[in-house]
Image (spheres, helix red, strand yellow):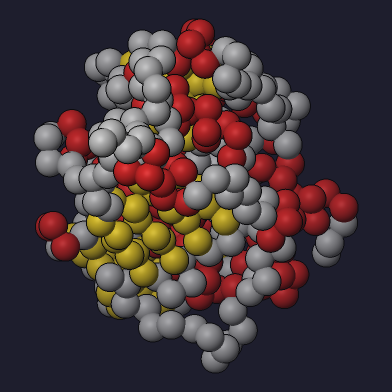
Length: 222
Length: 127
C-alpha cells in the first residue's frame, strides 16, 4: 500500500511517523522546504541539527527509509508524477492551491485523501472520498484563511488533527466510513463531528469527463 | 530572556493571542513529568518540550504537572480521560488513537500552564 504525504510539516510529519511504522505501508513524502528554527516547537521530529536541511529528506531518513523523500512541491503539472499509485493522499500542506490540486487529482482517479489543517487553538480533519463532497462543496471556492505566521498555532493541535485523520482512514479501510468533518477546539477542549451528506458533486470532473451536471445546468428537453 | 533566536523559535505560539510572551514565559518556567513508552507518552513529551516546558522522564507510566499527579484512563470506545490523582496512566492502544490522546493532552496542559493563575483555567478533567 502506498500513501503520499504532501508536506512534511506540523501535520504531515506526525502522520508520516504513524503510517511509516506500519510494515505494509510505503510512503512518498513531498516537501520542498527546509527546517527552520520557528518550526521546531510543533514539527517535533526535527531538531536543531536538522536546521537548513530539506524536511522530506530528514523525515524519510528518521523513519529509516531515505528513498521515501521527494524534495519537491506538488503542483497540477506534476500531480500525475507524484500521486500515481497512491492508495491515500495526506494533506500536510498549508495552502489552498495545493489542496485543490490534491482534491482534483484524487477525485479524477477515485482515491481518498485526508484534509487536515491546524491554526491557533483550532483544527479540522476530514477523509475526502470520491463519492462524497469535494473541497469546494464543503468550503466554497478560494477559501484561503490566515497563515500560522500571521495568527500563530498551538503545536499539538497539528498532531491531534493528524491522529483524528488517521483514525478516519482506519474506519474507511474497515468499510465503516461515512463522510464527516471533525472540528477540533483546543481552547474549549471539544471535538465536534459534522456528518456530511453524500452528494452529487458538480465541481470536479472525473476521468477527463465533463463535470457531473447539477440541476441548474441540465438543459430543458421538451 | 527574549533574544532574537528565542523569539523566532517560539514565534508561532507567541502569536497565539491567549499565550503571547507572558504565557510562553510561564511555559518555559514549567515542569511536567511524563513516564512510559509508546506513542501517547512519546508525542506528549515531544509537544510539551516543543512548547518550552521542562519535561522529566520517569520509569513508570505516570504523569505529573508541577506538583499535581494526574492519570490517563482509557474508556474503550469512549476515548480517554485525564483525571486527578496518583496512579499509572493507560494510553489508547491503536497508534492513531494514542497520538490523538498525547497531542490533545499536550494542548490541554499547554493551555493550563500558559494561563495566569485563576485566569481562564479549566478543571483538570479531560474527556
